[in-house]
Image 1 (tube, rainbow, N blue to C red):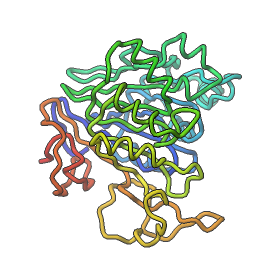
Image 2 (image 1 turned 180 degrees about the vertical axis):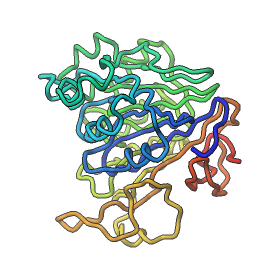
Image 3 (image 1 turned 90 degrees about the vertical axis):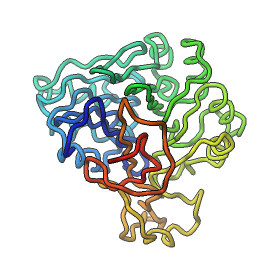
Image 4 (image 1 turned 180 degrees about the horizontal axis):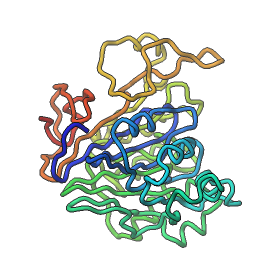
Length: 338
């Protein structure tokens, strides 16, 4: 970050293909990392080595490989430079959890603080008028669902002044129902949220009513961000997800374009637009072994500049340059950029 603003930060929702990685740049060479992306991605580490000397908190919200695949590279790069590490026990044996296996190995054991369980009602980081809090799961919910990872995926809330960003992992409808009973607040209102499970299934079926219930009864963002890959085999994001969000007037953006929105992905790969870097999306033709287009940008990495004194989410179309030097649409910033 080229300049520091009091009680402000940049929230990056990285384009890592089919996976999840989020970074909060705090200034002064510090950051919070929430998930690391799939093993094949490089974007998280590219952003970190450019701007970050110390990781205040490293969090794995969900121990699937599309969330924790890069944790080894980040640990290797930031030896003795990570202040806290949190992850869940969402599968057994524990050796199947990448962070657990790495941190107990002789190669890493002396270079990092003892990891902590990600549990509700923890403020994992706080400074001035900003804080990052775990909303879910509770200790009991984690134990009850430890072999059903999506039922114990972490939900975190980042606050800066009056602004709220919710990181929802791969949670399903049952998790949000449990969360609402725990906090007795319906719906949870926030400026921005990551849409659960890459815009995919949140229940055993793909019913539109389930998605409508989630965004009507349990959480209501102004903006929903979907991290997904062009060539994903899961048909993310589901039409039911997009319809439910759109019907409620919730603005939606995806990191990559998929055939759910455009059948001929190569026809839009070269459309002139600014793609914030680092992003996995490329203007060079790329395809899977089966010939399907991959890494076609919808928005690419999403960058939100957040300040405690910011105005509510604005929607002009002007494009400016943020404090990390990335070009971003002002419609996707929580306050007008300088």
